Length: 148
Image 1 (spheres, helix red, strand yellow):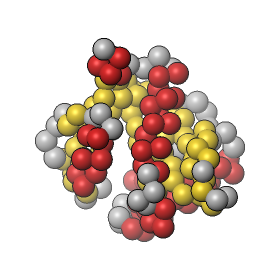
Image 2: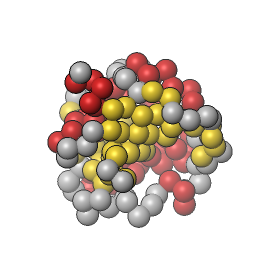
Image 3: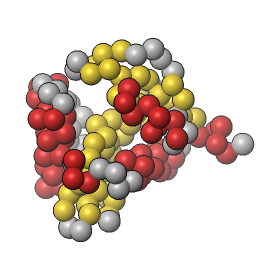
C-alpha cells in the first residue's frame, strides 16, 4: 500500500474518479456539488491518494480554513473498504496539518462514520445537519490535547 500526496494532474484525476464513484454514483451527490474551486494543485489544498497493489483505492484532501485544518472528500472505493484505509487517509491528512503547524482539525463526517472518527480521537461538536441530502456532524480534533 502507498499513501502519497498528489503532485500531478494525472494523480488528481485518479482522485476525482474515486470521488465520482463514491459520492456521485453511490451516494447521489450532484456532480456540481462534489467539485469546487479547491480541486486543483495550486497549494490551497493538499490532496492524497491511496494505492493498493498498483490500483487506486481511496482519497482525501485537507485545506486550512481560519487556521484550522479541514479534512474533506475522504472516500474509499467499495472493494477496498474494511481494510483500514480510512484510518490511513485520516492519519496522512493529520500529518500534513501538523507539518503546517496546525493545532486543530475538523471535518463534516457522515453520521454513520461518527464512531469511526471518535476512535481516531475526534469529538462530536454539532447536532446533525444535512449536506447534499446526507446527514452529517461536525467533528473536531485538537492535537494539543493529544500531546498532554
